[in-house]
Length: 128
Image (cartoon, rainbow, N blue to C red; front, side, top):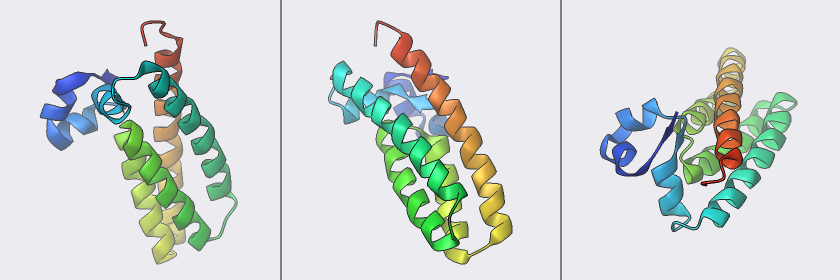
């Protein structure tokens, strides 16, 4: 589900939880420039794939750093589930909790796949 405009913003965190990609937030962050939004989404997809690869092959400190980067990127486009999952992974990495890291990676991968599919659908839509 891609939330649009004020509805997602008005609902606060519960509205954030309900959507995969907050279109209203993305629009505000890109100042309504649809070409910029497309570019930012394309960069996010490439960056998140690269970071997930790094996360899966790294030690806890590197996992935490890569997850921190992903938190900021996800928040920038309104991918709240990805941001929340990456935040949990960052915390687990800093705590060096192997079980926590493993669980958080699974959650982050699922959220990333979900938002990547939503982004692909948005990019395929000529009205965006």
